[in-house]
Image 1 (cartoon, rainbow, N blue to C red):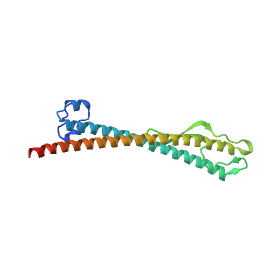
Image 2 (image 1 turned 90 degrees about the vertical axis):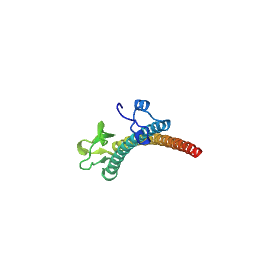
Image 3 (image 1 turned 135 degrees about the vertical axis):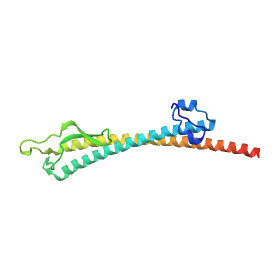
Length: 189
């Protein structure tokens, strides 16, 4: 960042946020290493934060699928009339898919149109088999999300481990610099 004094002290180190600032700023080796490690920790924190946000969004979508499956299972269990299910008031007959919109809220949309309904005597009612097929379809989607969540959790654990390694390396290097400085001071005495 042009015109920014990156500083030599540890207090001024955090101001150097670009490679150009690092290369042009006058500082000693200890401060440079601390700055680089701080930047790597910041990048690791951002990656972890992004993954956690994705996991929260995925969890919200999974909850929406579970709620829809529960709604359909309740209809099948409580509102049957032979082979037909009488929908409750306000039931959304669309085949729903769930996703997260740009605001982080769960949004639903129709994938394949509406669930088929009976005609004539059973006008507006659903076949039990159709609801079971829809439950199975949604359960398959939910299972895929669960699988994706497991992979995302492994990736998150790897990133947290990488961050811990960076922290440990930085701590060990700072400790070594301190011990070297103290040994030099003790030799002078």
